[in-house]
Image (cartoon, rainbow, N blue to C red):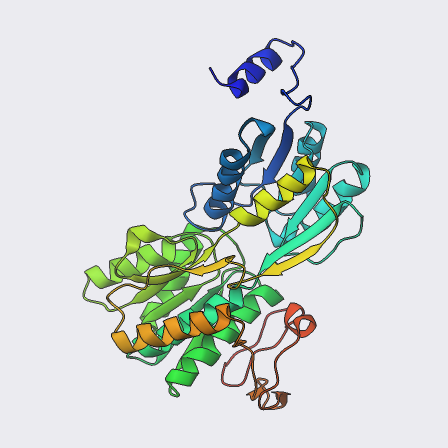
Length: 363
């Protein structure tokens, strides 16, 4: 019987819980998820990070989680309940939890809070963390530019926030570099996780002639829609989002962007355990191993694969930034001059399309 089982049994009977051998009780790390852990994408990947924390620290840590927590008032209630339940550190893993996280943090100054993809740190016990997803989008956009035969690539966006707009722009810019005739169709789903909506968006794109689909939504539904189209004589390619979505390899899923949260979660829980946790804002990417490109399958021609691997190597080495000028805004005005690199502040507030993308960004 493990120590965890003994502790759980003692708590169930209202008995005093013994401290660990070093005199400390386990640190309790909580996770709030916007989707189900079985979504195969965003939430699944965060939960893999939680499991990595358990494996790394053993009986020094206890983890708890709540899945499918809507953004808004429900989130504040769920985070509050987790804090009342004795969590020492709480990871809130969706952009829309930002205000709720800060509201609860004000009431629980001794609890550490880590908010994913947000920017508000209104209290000293709140940190933020994000990944430079746009680095991965540059790679998948490059592959998309090579793979399309209709010259129409599609992008399913969740919400029109800077993180998603960065991905759309990075994908289009790099598809255009290898295929000047490429067009991008953007569809907004207004959800992070809704398989039915995501599938409908994918099917509508396919009906419009889109033959490569990228996404910033959480489910595998677009992959399934592409697979269905291919079984009926189509030729549609997709990319795994947030996790590898390997069940759809080698086609339609021809590569993926994998969010590798495990090192960050282990580092931050470790900081609580050893008493060194401090407020910070983390924005890591390929160089830190937080953004990973999954296997590029044999459905991708050698030339395209080589170009993608060259870009991965350059970004990882810090030799290339996906937003390097010359780049114009959608209205034709100059955004970045030749050789100029976008600064993090502009990227973090990005609210415009680059030149060549049609349509408006919703308010």
